[in-house]
Image 1 (cartoon, rainbow, N blue to C red):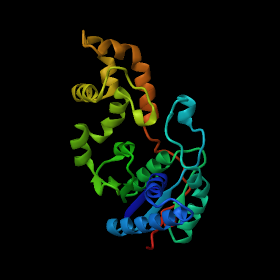
Image 2 (tube, rainbow, N blue to C red):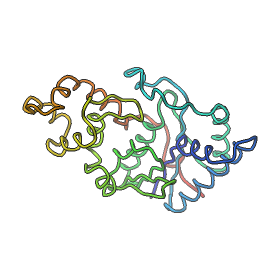
Image 3 (cartoon, rainbow, N blue to C red):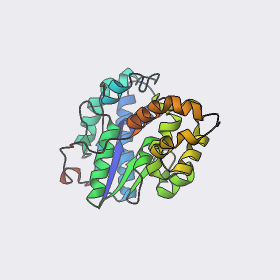
Image 4 (tube, rainbow, N blue to C red):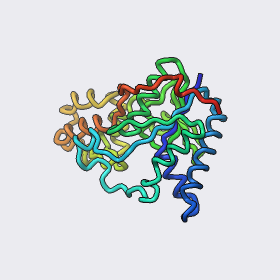
Length: 254
């Protein structure tokens, strides 16, 4: 059995930006999104499908880090107002949809994916969000519809030079500018990868940081290690949500 999980906001915003703007923009967005979902479900030969929405809310990440996602361009108001209608349109056309109040779609998707994986379904997450790469393993892959690319363990490892399970520590060290998360000042992509290649994890790095000597970033790590731990907490996707959905409700009929 195969489950296709759609990151609804990621898909809808990108499709909306591509359609001709005007009074028919929402209608065009709905029909194109439905077509994309159907094509990808057919290509993946999905037996199950779920499209995950989210609504504006203050989440646990904002409570821990008020600057979370600060500076992101807001969703166009026309689209924001139309989202409930888009969800209804997809459901009316046979697409199972899911949203959970006060939870980001990323955490809901991660919880659905891991739960399905544990029930021995092959899982594909359709999104351009790099944060989902931390979930990749044999049985869970990421589909970037717009680049026509699939990300499995080999692709993620080739891209980052790290295992997928090391990516949370990688972003904890270097920060995540997309979500406005701090990391450690002075540690960029190259140094973060070198530290994890050498020590294996953020925890092992911190335990041994007193031995780093005069490395130019060592002092900064000793000062900012709490920020690294905070960033790791924020960037790690929750996989333990009580979803209240069954495999039967996600059955895809085409």
